[in-house]
Amino acid sequence: MRLGIDLGGTKIEIVALDDDGVERLRWRIPTPQGDYTATTMAIVALVEAAEDELGQRGSVGIGIPGAESLATGLIKNANSTCLIGEPLKRDLQALLQRPVRLANDANCFALSEGIDGAGQDAEVVFGVILGTGVGGGIVVDRRVLNGANAIAGEWGHNPLPQPGADDQPLPACYCGRHGCIETYLSGPGLAADHQRQTGQTLDAPAIAAAAAAGDASCEATFQRYEARLGRALAGVINILDPQVIVLGGGLSKLERLYRNLPAQVAPHVFSDTVRTVFRPPLHGDSSGVRGAAWLWD
Image (cartoon, rainbow, N blue to C red; front, side):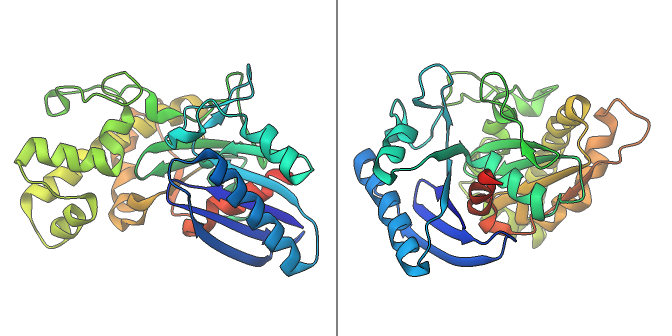
């Protein structure tokens, strides 16, 4: 039995999968806000309760909103800041008395979709998160690519390609840089762009609803968004050349992206044809936690 845990900023989710990937149990609890010790104990309590419920001990994989430093073993690059600098893997292994595998939550999303999801027929899958932040994960032959610095797939903190007049001034990013892809293509980035261009304060779902209802300014915001997303993903295709790109996160639910992205990507790809396909996640919001379980595949 494989246990997967998705450690999010607002919720912790656990899933139990059998050897064939069939779900046996799924629970969610609120994440203790800003409290590292309480967060680790909540994870341990979930694992123990799941094993008591199923009468079986399982392997444990955990998706986190950050990465484990290869130099120190401490958590880095986490938007759940209470995790930063903490030995999460070591602490959980001591508490659970077994090996634990950690991976970035975007890597877990990509792994789930690459094993038995929207990219299961592909050799190379790029999994994209378009939500509160922008992340990515790379799966090759059903294995996550971690990289020499444990940051493979972190395209959200590359600069937006070919910024034009509409992209200026380059927005500041929490990472300390300006003009990161995340500052344009996250949900808050979309809302901030709309505010800069129109003076209106609307969140991403409201902008999407207004655009669908025919609001010209909101439609223009989404056209800028899609053009930027096309340029950014073309850079990924030029380097990685995946057969499938799976879109996840809240913005991935917009059907218009799948209609419009191919035309936005094609002019920027160094090829006479673009065979990469764009798909929504087969497992939806459940993909990340499933991928955490599959870390023990």
